Length: 345
Ligand code: TLP
Image (cartoon, rainbow, N blue to C red):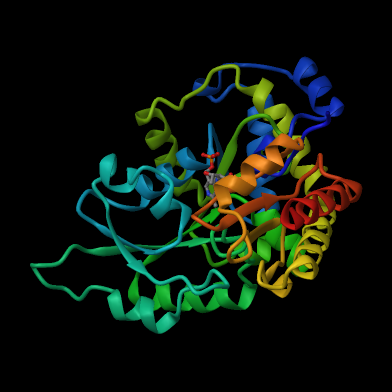
């Protein structure tokens, strides 16, 4: 039985072109800055996002932490959404490793935080308080239905940060998904951020890696933080080579994944409208409820797994399904027919 894996877009495997690029990659020792393929990936990422420089890192989690360490000193405070991946799913590494205090602000269902809520929690100069240094944003916003944050919103946060002398870090694990949904150049979404972390392995088919972008001065600092965390890699060009194709080729097809997510969302709503509001699905992440008095999320996940369909339960009644490179529209039709069958019995 063929498996349809909707757990995450992290499951995408390298394309044949990527495997060829891995074999042919020109290599050197990247800790000495001598791996030409890593250098090419970093230049490509910086140029794509309109930044001076970039740094190849092992993962999105590492990229986010490196940026926090480069922006903040121990005891500083960062303002972060209460549904942010950095706050929820990164083991509290801001505090555990960086000694950085998180001040949360509610994320609205579209992934934004209200300007007034952010402004309200910025600390004044008082001996009792930590110093506010950083505002953290996430685009697309994973836990908020994969919502894309628009350029205008980014600009308004940029203005606020300038007014208060704060820096902005953007967790752009799925930044290209946002750009595809908004039909906008990704650099327009990063112009107001001091640092951005993008993932090459979320829907873009690279096997490993993320890239952090910012000013040259910031990236020099970030390079030190990467070494501190043990993330200096040597002949990393074998990983950077597929990363270049992820950025230059695989970003072009993401609207296909968004279209499949929309088909899934509308199909689910037509099975039972209580499962989700299909209009809330703007990118490739679909959260849906199991209908009341039917199955729990764990039971539904098990029943789907028995049919070769993999999903992730995200709460007592919430399931996540993520579309990606390996998912075709006929797979979505099959998934919908199986869910219909499961709910009927
Ligand atoms: N997200 C994973 C899980 O951790 C939930 C997923 O399957 O969606 N920022 C965002 C917005 C992310 O969604 C993720 C991964 C990361 C950072 C961390 O990236 P990695 O897994 O490369 O450390």
